[in-house]
Image (cartoon, rainbow, N blue to C red; front, side):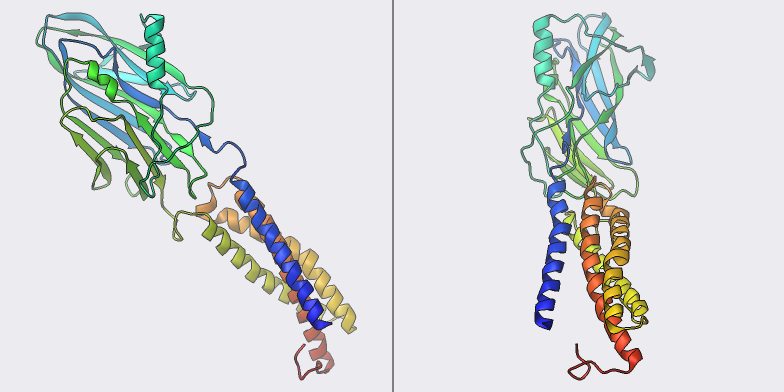
Length: 381
């Protein structure tokens, strides 16, 4: 009988563990996992036989959440031809629905910027739209490897920011363009969301010439983060830097992910296992306390029965509450959507079984000790 009862308890415990693990497997498919972000690009129309880009400094200052960045593009321009009056410049940003605010300054003085479709023919708009909606590189910031993915989310919007400059003959100066860039997000690959940034460089081949290019990606001071880029980046202090004598052979793509609090690595599973293990230990302690109280009831059967039932119901309710709140409180699981709540419920159910088994055994032992009756088998049950 005791062996059969033990097997039943083990079966119940295994079933509860399955309930704990099933939500973790289902959570990965809950909701759209990936959301499209912005894609920035160079000045348009980028075709000129007299305006030269002597150099460009492109900087991404990541915000604290790493999900967006302030982009600053500094162009050193030179007019190697006749004077140009009210020369139009177009800067295109493909955004994911949020209104982008872009500013421009020439030689340190603000330039009025308007957002419009511009004087483009339908075929020109179609060509630019095709170029600006192509995202062909996804990078894993932990491994550095590229991967294929499908982007979910609302349709992107192409916003054409137009401004004009007066460029005297042989004039040189600095043009600064600034805007906030929203990253594409992948929340299923690792514990924290992976943020993907894309910026088109190659359309700038249309200028008369293009000089040295420097790209810098910086996070707020003290940020611990993973980084991977498709160009030749090197780490320089708290920044990643890529330098080229001209335009590279590919558009820019890089990915970032927060790494603070990941003491068990970037995968979520170890944190779930740790949380469930702590819950089971707490469930055993809760069951022991309930069993100790139930062991003071008159009658051995009453003590064991009330202890088991109290451990299952009262202890189980407390186990579920503790499990959910514990998993939600683990920093590494805060970005896991509903996963901590679902897995917490499963872990709490497993804890209820543990509480019931421990409470029943402790209640029986407590009653026997208080009654001065030695259990059969020399104290072993």
